[in-house]
Image (cartoon, rainbow, N blue to C red; front, side, top):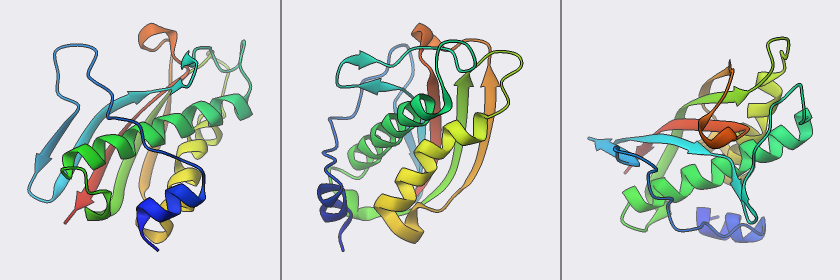
Length: 152
Protein backbone atom coordinates (compact mmCIF):
# COMPACT_ATOMS: atom_id res chain seq x y z
CA UNK A 1 0.00 0.00 0.00
CA UNK A 2 1.26 3.47 -0.81
CA UNK A 3 2.20 5.84 1.98
CA UNK A 4 -0.44 8.34 0.82
CA UNK A 5 -3.14 5.66 0.84
CA UNK A 6 -2.12 4.44 4.29
CA UNK A 7 -2.21 7.98 5.68
CA UNK A 8 -5.67 8.47 4.15
CA UNK A 9 -6.78 5.17 5.70
CA UNK A 10 -5.63 6.53 9.07
CA UNK A 11 -7.55 9.77 8.46
CA UNK A 12 -4.38 11.85 8.24
CA UNK A 13 -3.88 14.58 5.67
CA UNK A 14 -0.36 15.95 5.61
CA UNK A 15 -0.35 19.73 5.98
CA UNK A 16 1.90 22.03 4.04
CA UNK A 17 5.40 21.81 5.47
CA UNK A 18 5.69 24.27 8.36
CA UNK A 19 7.90 27.29 7.70
CA UNK A 20 10.94 27.76 9.93
CA UNK A 21 10.50 30.12 12.88
CA UNK A 22 14.00 31.62 12.72
CA UNK A 23 17.17 31.78 10.60
CA UNK A 24 17.46 28.13 9.51
CA UNK A 25 16.08 25.86 6.81
CA UNK A 26 13.39 23.25 7.51
CA UNK A 27 15.47 20.43 6.03
CA UNK A 28 18.79 19.74 4.36
CA UNK A 29 19.29 16.99 1.80
CA UNK A 30 22.73 15.39 1.50
CA UNK A 31 22.75 12.62 -1.07
CA UNK A 32 19.82 10.36 -0.30
CA UNK A 33 19.54 11.55 3.31
CA UNK A 34 17.18 14.28 4.52
CA UNK A 35 17.86 15.97 7.86
CA UNK A 36 14.67 17.60 9.13
CA UNK A 37 14.89 20.43 11.66
CA UNK A 38 12.98 20.08 14.91
CA UNK A 39 9.22 20.08 14.44
CA UNK A 40 7.20 21.39 17.36
CA UNK A 41 3.89 20.09 18.69
CA UNK A 42 1.16 21.89 16.80
CA UNK A 43 -2.44 20.82 16.34
CA UNK A 44 -5.53 22.15 14.60
CA UNK A 45 -6.04 24.67 17.41
CA UNK A 46 -2.45 25.92 17.40
CA UNK A 47 0.61 25.15 19.46
CA UNK A 48 0.36 22.31 21.95
CA UNK A 49 2.00 23.72 25.04
CA UNK A 50 2.63 22.38 28.50
CA UNK A 51 5.14 20.76 30.79
CA UNK A 52 5.10 17.01 31.28
CA UNK A 53 5.03 16.13 34.95
CA UNK A 54 3.34 19.43 35.86
CA UNK A 55 0.31 20.31 33.74
CA UNK A 56 0.32 17.59 31.09
CA UNK A 57 0.10 13.79 31.35
CA UNK A 58 1.92 11.16 29.27
CA UNK A 59 -1.09 10.45 27.02
CA UNK A 60 -1.42 14.14 26.11
CA UNK A 61 2.34 14.34 25.56
CA UNK A 62 2.22 11.32 23.24
CA UNK A 63 -0.56 13.00 21.21
CA UNK A 64 1.62 16.11 20.98
CA UNK A 65 4.50 13.94 19.73
CA UNK A 66 2.22 12.46 17.06
CA UNK A 67 1.66 15.96 15.67
CA UNK A 68 5.44 16.29 15.38
CA UNK A 69 5.48 13.06 13.34
CA UNK A 70 2.93 14.50 10.92
CA UNK A 71 5.00 17.68 10.51
CA UNK A 72 8.15 15.60 9.97
CA UNK A 73 6.42 13.70 7.16
CA UNK A 74 5.21 16.98 5.66
CA UNK A 75 8.82 18.20 5.55
CA UNK A 76 9.97 14.94 3.96
CA UNK A 77 7.25 15.26 1.33
CA UNK A 78 8.47 18.80 0.59
CA UNK A 79 12.06 17.54 0.33
CA UNK A 80 10.84 14.92 -2.14
CA UNK A 81 9.24 17.51 -4.40
CA UNK A 82 5.76 16.57 -3.22
CA UNK A 83 6.16 12.80 -3.71
CA UNK A 84 6.04 11.15 -0.26
CA UNK A 85 6.40 7.75 -1.96
CA UNK A 86 10.13 8.54 -2.36
CA UNK A 87 10.55 7.98 1.39
CA UNK A 88 12.67 4.85 1.86
CA UNK A 89 12.80 4.81 5.66
CA UNK A 90 12.93 6.76 8.87
CA UNK A 91 16.52 6.49 10.10
CA UNK A 92 16.74 8.40 13.41
CA UNK A 93 14.61 10.62 15.62
CA UNK A 94 15.67 12.85 18.47
CA UNK A 95 12.80 13.88 20.72
CA UNK A 96 12.82 16.67 23.27
CA UNK A 97 10.18 16.72 26.00
CA UNK A 98 9.38 19.88 27.98
CA UNK A 99 9.31 18.29 31.43
CA UNK A 100 9.88 18.74 35.12
CA UNK A 101 13.16 17.67 36.75
CA UNK A 102 11.59 14.51 38.20
CA UNK A 103 9.69 13.40 35.06
CA UNK A 104 11.22 10.20 33.66
CA UNK A 105 8.74 9.01 31.02
CA UNK A 106 10.25 10.88 28.04
CA UNK A 107 10.39 7.63 26.01
CA UNK A 108 6.66 7.07 26.54
CA UNK A 109 5.94 10.57 25.27
CA UNK A 110 8.11 10.18 22.16
CA UNK A 111 6.40 6.82 21.52
CA UNK A 112 3.51 8.94 20.22
CA UNK A 113 5.71 9.84 17.26
CA UNK A 114 7.41 6.47 16.88
CA UNK A 115 4.19 4.46 17.11
CA UNK A 116 2.48 6.65 14.52
CA UNK A 117 5.39 6.36 12.07
CA UNK A 118 5.38 2.57 12.33
CA UNK A 119 1.58 2.46 12.03
CA UNK A 120 1.68 4.70 8.94
CA UNK A 121 4.84 3.39 7.28
CA UNK A 122 5.26 -0.20 8.49
CA UNK A 123 8.89 -1.33 8.48
CA UNK A 124 9.90 1.92 6.74
CA UNK A 125 8.90 3.68 9.94
CA UNK A 126 11.17 1.69 12.28
CA UNK A 127 14.05 3.85 13.45
CA UNK A 128 16.73 4.51 16.03
CA UNK A 129 15.86 7.17 18.56
CA UNK A 130 16.75 9.34 21.53
CA UNK A 131 14.22 10.84 23.96
CA UNK A 132 15.49 13.53 26.30
CA UNK A 133 14.13 16.04 28.77
CA UNK A 134 14.34 19.80 28.31
CA UNK A 135 13.58 22.38 31.00
CA UNK A 136 11.76 24.44 28.35
CA UNK A 137 11.14 24.41 24.61
CA UNK A 138 10.44 27.20 22.10
CA UNK A 139 7.12 29.00 22.69
CA UNK A 140 6.37 26.67 25.61
CA UNK A 141 5.57 23.69 23.37
CA UNK A 142 5.37 20.26 24.97
CA UNK A 143 7.45 18.36 22.40
CA UNK A 144 9.97 18.97 19.63
CA UNK A 145 11.30 16.19 17.38
CA UNK A 146 13.95 16.23 14.65
CA UNK A 147 14.59 13.41 12.23
CA UNK A 148 16.85 11.84 9.66
CA UNK A 149 15.23 10.13 6.67
CA UNK A 150 16.44 8.15 3.66
CA UNK A 151 14.80 8.96 0.34
CA UNK A 152 15.07 7.58 -3.18
